[in-house]
Length: 418
Image (cartoon, rainbow, N blue to C red; front, side):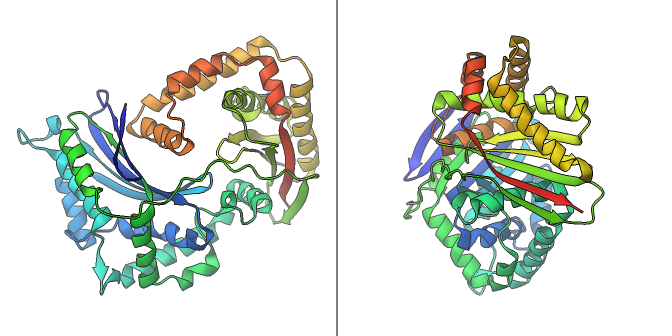
């Protein structure tokens, strides 16, 4: 891995690619997750990936990608902690697999990606209105359709209840009542501001990268403010007692979500302790929640825990028979208390560590894995390797697990029931 600053607030990371037959280029634009712009950030990807100035219709652009040996382009909008990331990605076969000898497909991929970012299709100085209306319709459908996935819907509403309007609580998809306020003009102004201010992280996962590196340096060395700062991990104040909320729906299966946060920001060592603790408690198929709450007591269809290091938040969610909801909540709380207060067998810790290390090694199993890993590390400001984290995981003890779990405070119990 090679990382360098190529312009103010622009970082380029080169990742080797011996294992795969395709190359991948990604440009991520990162800004604080502004609630007022959340809906516009959510609508941008579908608009941007349709076409660009050199290939101004969807048909022409699709034909261009097909001629590039069926290259794929995607634009996405994600939330990482208190930050918004608009990610532009293009992927295509390596040069050595092209038909024509000496063909530089990687360079061509680079040109297309830069074109999509810097030369979007415009109509009278702003985004194409017809396209925007289609994307607004699609976003409205997606937001309204979230209720159909009851598990995700329950977790999302638990987070919303606790984080409210803080940066950690800004919705990835934005807000339904703001969709109609978006125009081609204000959306384009938002995008120009994004280009002008964002922290830019460029990843080139390829061999023979010199041409692509040179093109990226040229493309993103233009004069701009480049003043957006990545927001650090924000730990929300814990509540003195948990908020409880039940949403009534006519569902066959009930859902519950318990939301815990740490009482302070974790130290670097505690991050590794929580990685093991969270997996042991509820993050794997051999975890305590799975074995004891689901399997032994048969209280639920599933029960899992996940810790988000960017928000210092652990969610525990479960699908239950309606009459078992309260029993399941009590069983989850008991398992956490039991893990903190009693002995943890070394065999259980070793099994958990093995699962974590296998997961960390899986970052090398695809083109996306390492790129996503180092993007998260860049936002966190640490740039650690998966191997280093594996070494730290191996050092975690039973006392470390108990001590870090003691920092969790229950803030929300959210339920979906009849």
